[in-house]
Image (cartoon, rainbow, N blue to C red):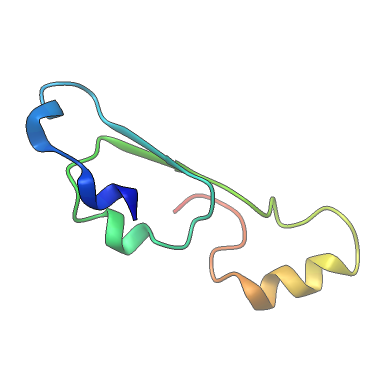
Length: 64
């Protein structure tokens, strides 16, 4: 992942990580970031897809 190239020389600034899928938040938590913004499924928006997103994604919607 690109995040492995993160340099701490930027630690004097506010660091915001923007990542599309909320799947690697545990890995990112070890990095010195001030905020992480992630999102993908929006709990889906149409039935029956809402049933599948609950099975596929542990963090389907909400704040974590």
